[in-house]
Length: 146
Image (tube, rainbow, N blue to C red):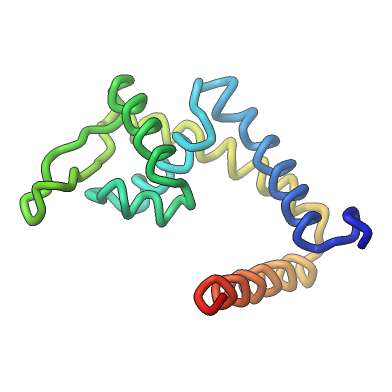
């Protein structure tokens, strides 16, 4: 097998390169980790969420979520309060400082995304979106059924 031509490897390489190109926006300028950025973006879209739900939305494991939330809480970006329905859970929400930070980062992240997508024509962008959706669905099926 030629690793350089192996589709899962190529996807991982592209994913890492794209992630690193975006990290320049939030890491260098705003001192956020990749995990913190993912959580910030997830919270901006859906407030009042548990850490477990954040893990599922961001593809981060429990320890990654916990570390990121601890740092974000220390930095005044989020708050955690007990879940009235289940006291074992904490509900996470953005504080005003977290929302303000998110609003600063989004235009820069979108500009990076636009720059990357400019290399594709409209048909290629649509095909990429469709292909990624199909691959994700198929990969999830493999995970479910072994």
